Length: 191
Image (cartoon, helix red, strand yellow):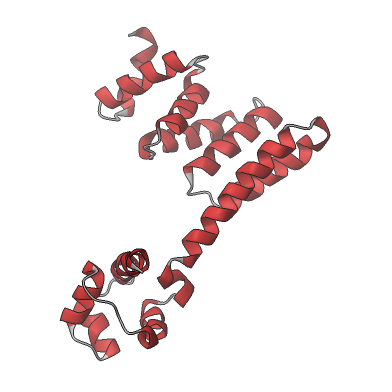
């Protein structure tokens, strides 16, 4: 119950901000006080279960989104795409299907760094040379925004051609040292 309370609190706050609504405005639409909305968002209180459809409606989402079910479903789908890609690439006869699976995953979850790197891998395997600009664009996005060292290491490999983990980690240390400023990137190989 505590986890659900935290998810709902976080979702109400984020969705309210996305809707460009103040706590007072949301409270007014729900005929509640802004103090109640504030407590919900801090996780100190919980809206009555019968209020969830009204809250979701005011925020322009479904109750599933408000409850965080969409995130759980999305995470499961992402894991399934990754597993399916690995399965398909392990068998030479299904390689063309593997690229289609990676492309579909990227179209659905282009915001997920794991899927971004899965797609980069597929582009590199199935369309080498043809997709270099797209690979570089995606890898830069991963390096600039992702905090997962494994994904960042993989992205640096595609950008710089590093062949081993030691070279990739050296790149990442330099990247962090320079405050994630891409201006040094062109000069890095001469360091």
